[in-house]
Image (tube, rainbow, N blue to C red; front, side, top):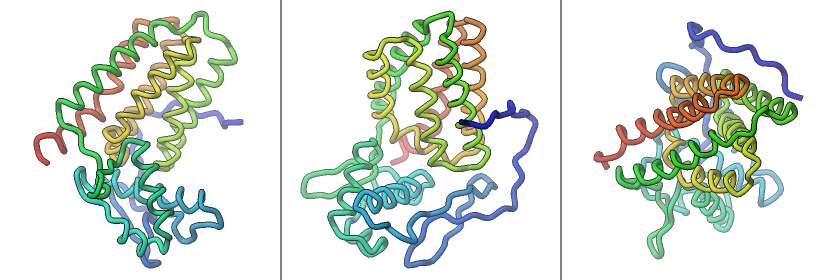
Length: 264
């Protein structure tokens, strides 16, 4: 059962000065600092575990963090041989990890040219987000009211889990909790086909949205917007919920467009 989470004080400043570890290359630990705050990321790469699934998951986690923090930029080539050495892994393990990153929309693979970090043009970003706006607005207006108590309790729990992950700067948990929150929110439509369409469109934009995960102000804004969405549901105000869902997409999109579109 999730522990209750107290609504964050907007004036609270997260303390700095703590150091954490991210990445492990040839057993050397590396610290990463983002916007003046060291993020709590503990690399799982000290051991790949005893199964293929664990080895693939560990490499995926490390490479995803590398992309989020800008160590690998959009369009940058990703070399299997480099990762075989870095992770002391077999080629099929590395290849499976790249396939999983491709499935998540972060990496794209090209015949006879290998893999690279996926790049979205400004036009591509606009088209994807046009679809997301249509789906999210429609779904928000179709949440069934009055809210089912069990569903609403699960929604609050997902909100609190995301908020806790943001405070702890656990980006893996942030991603998972954010996915769960939005899945649970749109389950409130009781339309599984609409929910499935939203999840599909969300997956296509993960390569855009993931780049903002390393920015504390974006994480905190997303957390606060989740609280506002739950409040709108509690008040039965689907018009406000629809507005919040649309605005919720803007920061990550703007961050990607400003940083990469027209530059690369």
